[in-house]
Image (cartoon, rainbow, N blue to C red; front, side, top):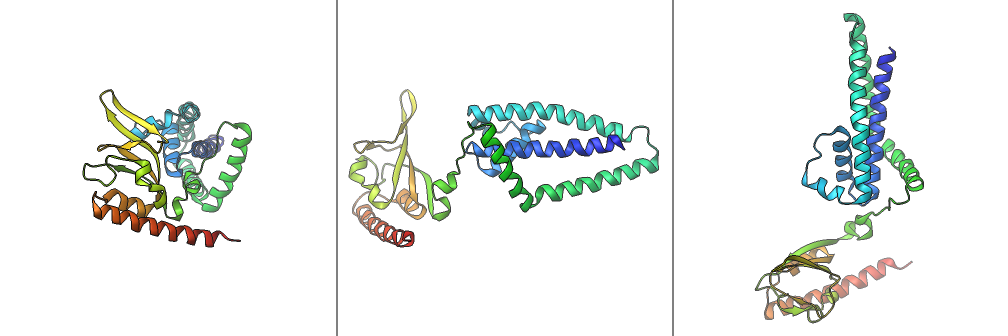
Length: 257
């Protein structure tokens, strides 16, 4: 019975460690889904070979979290397997069946507990508090909330084609800010390779082949990506400016106390 209790405790502790690791990764800026998957992958030692993992370990704080999860996982899984063997070795058929039923029931209880939204909120709340005090270097960034993703805004990459309305014009000429769109950066291919222009200035010329990283209303970004040069494109710009002005007025009204 002691071995069985130890096995259940080992599984419970493993689940708690994975949850703590997932929250810690989430606090570094990863989405909840990605953080959960990478924490489980690192702890179990399986699946942590995706291209996404390269992005995760490029961050020093995330790399440290992953290293700890891998270390604890290698020890934890070995302990669980060893305890599982000890639980059933040397037991009679009837006793082994009873142990198996207790184990299955315990796993079902753990599944219900750790998949409960109420328990999840409670655990995340206290895990975050603990991590914020113990590891202040883990900075909390909820990008979806910060950028208003849930309020119709989005970040999008727009590839500039030769016939694009954007091509061969400076950002000052384009006046995208009047449409409610900000150009955060530009990916450009050169002879030396791809370069990134962060926070481009107004006199930056947009060239065919550039990939713009833009932030703004989702529908406005979609329309801009399809806009072609010429009078049709100029008219679309004027209409987009009017829509942006109306949107700004509506948002200002909603924001009033």
